[in-house]
Image 1 (cartoon, one colour):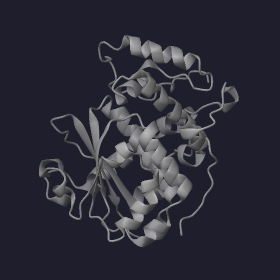
Image 2 (tube, rainbow, N blue to C red; image 1 turned 90 degrees about the vertical axis):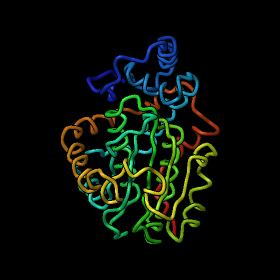
Image 3 (cartoon, rainbow, N blue to C red; image 1 turned 30 degrees about the vertical axis):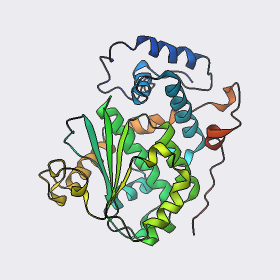
Length: 298
């Protein structure tokens, strides 16, 4: 795929590059030249993949392959990225996705996700995953080479009805994205205000979770103050920061204005399977290249 002015979507704050990694960047660059199905990406983008894998080249190449293959094979999740599309606007109304403004002493960013509207009939799971990935892409751009992410999922207001909205292909693709394709350092995933049917949720999700991700999970029946210090939390949870609603509205506005064109143009970042030299046949990439069909969970 020819380079365009959008061929390096993660431009913000990645320069100057970390010192001492020129060899790794060049090694990944040379490998990508031997993979004609992959799109051209800038050195900034390569550094992002390397950083997320602690500058291990082979692991970074695996992440790159998974990232672009997944985006090709799951268009329901990685196209139609206009935040002003009605189905995306619905998700931005019924959920709140916020990056909390204060960073931990270790340099970790804290992300918080929760429902704003508890009517499960309004939630399309595939649409929610799409918007979640759009939000995460923006965060990677804004945060540049973050030392890590602490994620808080607040389940308050979730019902068994929300569980019935989950579609297995979208869930499988989402779990693959988070575990093998997302160029970020995940440090902890806190699930707070856990619901009475959390065991049913885990029965659905656990077969899709690798052990290294499972070790990051922490469950609490209490709120976010039980897992992070109050100083990092919005006033909704007893902290000193602006409310979740205010933060969400501000970040939603940014997505709909300054990042709108960028998100739509980023749809070009996928494999060109007509140029793939060798088709994957087993393991991870067999899963990534499987068809994407809507199978509802009853």
